[in-house]
Length: 218
Image (cartoon, rainbow, N blue to C red; front, side):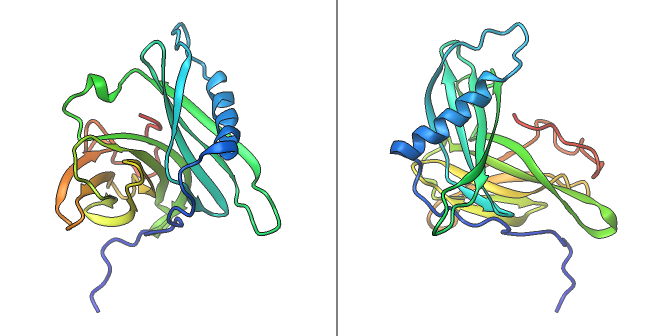
């Protein structure tokens, strides 16, 4: 058996377990997400009022479930983040809610060359060989090209997570910024043909230090 060249965690998060939020559950998540949006320090920017919130497939890791969200504002910004909570059990409702939110003016509308519209946030770390750290990163978004079926997260061309599209939305949770390698998201059709790819970084190859914090968010 050949030696594994990339000793990294793969497929560590549970695949989505629930449909996209709706009804009272969507209302609960919306309140937490909007609370995090209200706490954003936007400096001198007037972000405007948030519009309809789009939720993305859930992913569960280390006992917490993450449900990402985005919303456009009346001023043309995009709010993005997630709501997380301790996973429900048969006799307990979800507990320990937390929410993270940020904003960007760098939207898909202003970038017609994008093939995937991506958001990301680091939610933890994984310590690998010789103490090197991987940044466990939640990645969510939607494809901007048609006929996609599944999106993968790939680290140095090694698939470390994947998610089927749900209403043209996906969520990944995968190691990033490990041993000089950074994540790419790749879109495939139902027959396994690659349709699109996007890096999480505008300038690939510049994040060489494993122990430095990568830029979080957009």
